[in-house]
Image 1 (spheres, rainbow, N blue to C red):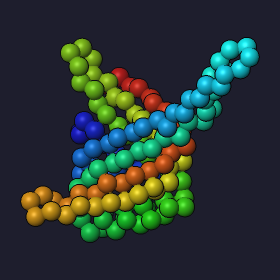
Image 2 (image 1 turned 90 degrees about the vertical axis):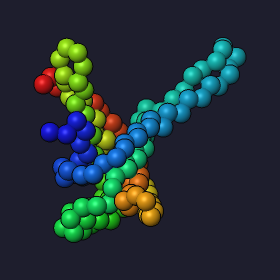
Image 3 (image 1 turned 180 degrees about the vertical axis):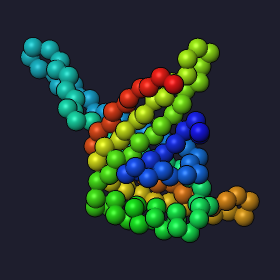
Image 4 (image 1 turned 90 degrees about the horizontal axis):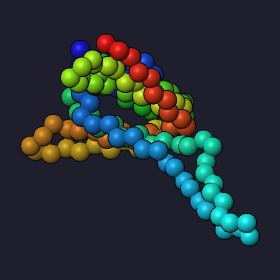
Length: 133
């Protein structure tokens, strides 16, 4: 079993090289006669960036391409599974990004390395779950 796995709409995305998630927190302060008032967003949007190698089978390539194309308009869930191995008891962290839409799809070819893709998503919400091994 891999220590890190990526799933989009329940489909495992192989050859992942990186995952970067960001909370798009926005805080503001308004000065009032009674003192400063802090304000933030109730629903914090998230951005997610996945790096992966492009070397998969033709069927996997077509399946992922079709899924990503549909995510221009259709929201899907993306789950990142990570096994944390420590000195005591290993555990699993699942990070679920909900209502994700494709926000960008870049690729890079070079003479020295395999072709790599960077997939960018906008998510409406995120939740973490934890599990003992």
